[in-house]
Length: 185
Image (cartoon, rainbow, N blue to C red; front, side, top):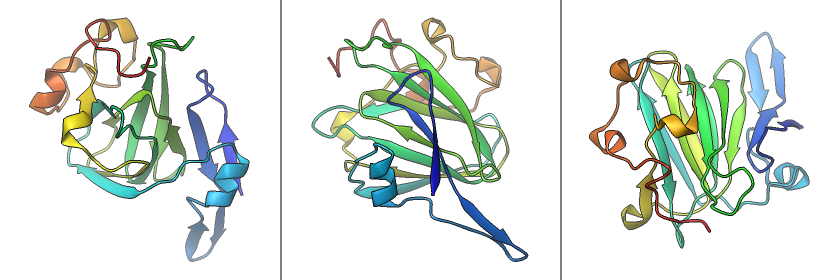
C-alpha cells in the first residue's frame, strides 16, 4: 500500500508508503514496482545513491542529467529532514519554470518522485541528514547539469538565508533559468 499525493505539477508526485508499526518500530515497503506501476510510475530504476549532509542549511542542487542519461529519481530521507524541491525545465510544458517544494523526513516517511525533465535539489533542515535516492539512468559527468538554486525567477522559498547556505562551488556557479540551454524541449 502506498499513498500518492497530487502536486501542482502533475508529473511530480509525493508518495507515502504505508508503515506497519508495533512495539519494535515499523516496517515499510518503500519501493514496490507493481504498486508504483498501479500508481502510474513505470520507471526502471538502475542505481541507488546516498548522501549525508553534516550541517543544517546545506543546499544540494538544483541538479539534472541531460539525454541520453536523463534521470527520473525517487527521493527519501533516512535520517533528519529536508525541504525537497523540483523545478520543471521542460521548455514546452505548461508548468515550465514552476516548482514543487515538500518537506521530507525520516519521521514522515514521504518520498518525492522526480520525473525526467525536472531539476532537483534540497535544503537540509537538521544536521546529519541522510538522503537515499533511486535513479533511472547511470551517472554521467558529461551529462550532469544544474540550475542556480536561488534564481529569483523561480520564487522558491528556501528555509535558509542565501548568505548562510552551505553550498558546493559548482552549485554557486549554475545558470539561471533564463540562461539555461534547452535540454528538454
